[in-house]
Amino acid sequence: MSEAAETVRLFFALWPANALQEKLAIWARQAADRGRAMRRENIHLTLAFLGATEASLIPSLTAHALSVRFGPIRLPLDRVGYWKHNRIIWCGAGEEPQALVALVDALRTRLDAGGIHYDHKPFVSHITLVRNAHGLPAVPAWIPLVWQAHDFALVSSTRVEGRVSYAVLQRFPAAAD
Ligand code: ATP
Ligand code: MG
Image (cartoon, rainbow, N blue to C red):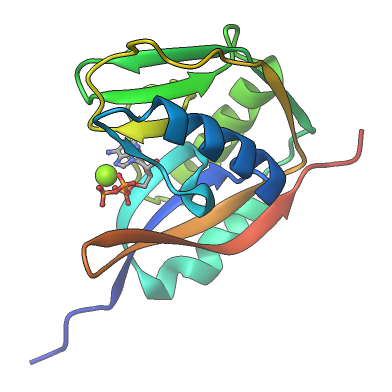
């Protein structure tokens, strides 16, 4: 009997620098109320969610991602919101930057061409800040930030003693301006 192939839970994301994660995490903790603030090191923006993927596919996934051409992304974080259906408080851009939409399109097209499975739900960019939230009651003032993203990342997600832990496996740089 052959052994089951080893799988890893994977996704592509924009991964903020620590300093930006820290600013977002501080706000998240203030806003958390009865919810659960995302930990600083887990804060990100998902581009495509692959889910359980055979580990042996990672080199080809990486090659696909390296072939995606995209420019630097200027992402204003000028909106916070609450989604009832999954009870998260999030932040993001009031108006989706064209460069971000182009990156997601290019990446997903490349994954399609490579026969790589991912969740095809339409992309709605957001950064989750609080989980299990009950709304946006009396949240602290949101100070708009601007995120300049110069790469995207392939990330693995694991659960260790009930806590989700993400690891950036590789980064893929934008073409120069
Ligand atoms: P957990 O599910 O263990 O509570 P999590 O949702 O943070 O924690 P993952 O489920 O591994 O961790 O998800 C990783 C990232 O992908 C998160 O940003 C999550 O919102 C997003 N994600 C998860 N499932 C999907 C999906 N089916 N479609 C799109 N994005 C997804
Ligand atoms: Mg999840």
